[in-house]
Length: 469
Image (cartoon, rainbow, N blue to C red):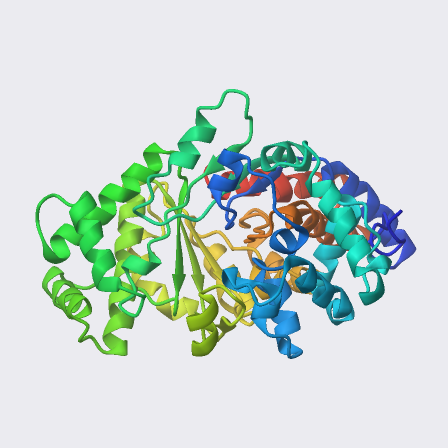
């Protein structure tokens, strides 16, 4: 049986007995609600093809940069963890390395999610995860993986996932999504998300080739910037026809810029030619964020922006293991200034939904909650990535609620590639929301009846409202 720590019924609830009792009731009201996951990185093909997971390392370690970065910081080489498909170690050897270094995860968000996965999905006690028992735990998890019912489609149902959004290349044919959408025996919704970063950033790998392929595949016969913008709009419509409800943009800054057609076209030509400066590349990205917002007003896609991260900061790791392998580093962001051009023109546009996310906690109360507290288009993106940790979730809720209230939230965003962590992460968010609301009840700031209504809204109605579900 899992340990008292890993599966305690009061985990993450307030320590004060009176407040905890209120939180228990609030959490119970939402514990079994379906999971709405409107932004994440699980591959739709895994679900569509319903392929068995190969081994514990491939499922829980290698693809999850939240997990591997902790060990890398302690001197473990990424190829020892089979990151990026490398084979510097066997799956079992990589698992032994993980178990040996399990104490590194104490106090981390990754450690919390993993404990919940081990306890609730695999029936493994986290106290058994140590170097001496690594093989035994590996075999126990492998046996669970090998069960006929332990397949992605069955787990979608078992986890209670009603909506799962993926992140997709603009030129993807979306065949896995179509396969799932037309399967009458499969109830969850798996939705594509339009993610055009590689077609907007001049510094992206093969931006020139990407732009040319986009124009050829979806343009109207014109070349250059005009054909490029038309192709972008056409591919957005293709995504909508295949179930998409949002576009996602991982930006260097939160800047938006409204350029004239000729100035934008000149920047585009420099980008294609590879002669643009970094400042010009940032200007074009900012302009395209304005253009994407204008398109969203027309076609109805929700626009999300994940700003403020220096991506792939370690050249050697990028070259050897690829992107999204743990070396993206946050930096400060100025949303209030950067978003002015976008919000001046579209902030009150009918039907426009804009959800900014950040890792920069300083802007929650200073910028994001005042923006969402005025503009009907702006919803506050929940903590993501380094900040979707219990204490950070509580700081987020405390920072934004007094200015923007509860109704301007996006709902919890798990933003994960780690499929089996999804229920644990959503449950953690629900427990934190219950604790926050319980304190307000105990302080006689809201009634317990109203708190029960609010937590249901936060967990269920907010993501449906923000993402037009």
